[in-house]
Image (tube, rainbow, N blue to C red; front, side, top):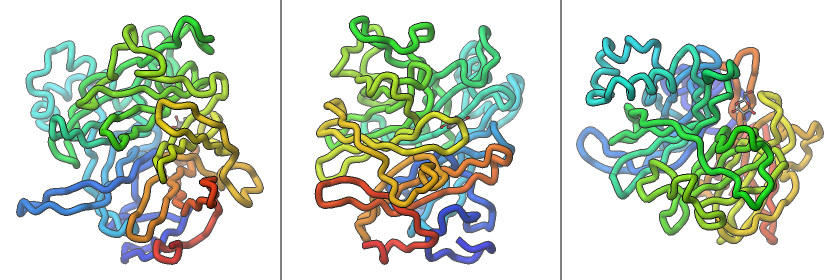
Length: 370
Ligand code: GAL
């Protein structure tokens, strides 16, 4: 990450990070994973793929993707899900006409509403490959005002879009409210049920996929199982069985920015508190299965004197196998200049008992952190 567009050979958390064209990377609230990518000659190879929010124009934007061989140098692959400038553009713009060919007028109205460049909020996009349909499924926090409320976070939905190829274009399907608190448990926000805000995805070793998200006005995290093509919940909220199709985590604890991963048979979930763009203290949880009993652990940060997760908020934790490095990805949001928000990638360490530790390093390389 140097100030010019020359090649990077280290991570420098918090510094401006440019892509291989020399433009600042726009992939906030993102996710990094390794995917099999087919090149123009039909050959398959593994690539690192980074998806995240495009904040080029500030708060509202679409979703960008980048690819890399080494995790340091990222090639821009485009705005893979565009937001929609106006309802008319769906009927006139060639890109949208092609993408949404066959959609009814009502469906197009929903696309225009859910992806509106003027009103919609598109945050924390994550993608998973679906072997069942051989396609890529993008989930994101789909929000915006409703007829009842002008708040940017009134809709509180999870949005879904699909693409045949990893780098899009992703076609928006719909946005949904998700599972609701069972009647025998205390709903922390009964006046608006099924809310879904900050979110993430996790695919387990058996192929089951889950959406992890803040619900009940961000007071309670939920984990809900997806169906076998990963495009919706496993069961509709009215039919979902607590403990099998979904669980609630620490009702009232008010956590968001979830990042779930599996290491040595243990499931870890890192989260932040809920203070908007301002950073706060991280906390993590561990369990023996996704739908299992989650135990609350502490803040994994060491030497974080301000208790702000080194001025960052979690978005994804992933493993780099060659150097056996676990990487914490966080966002350092600049609320007054969201386009300039920074990426905080740090190596995560684990003690022999499995406890997690996160320390700040101003520059690091994968190999040194073996
Ligand atoms: C944070 C959330 C971000 C964004 C922000 C808006 O709490 O994690 O994704 O929604 O609030 O204030």
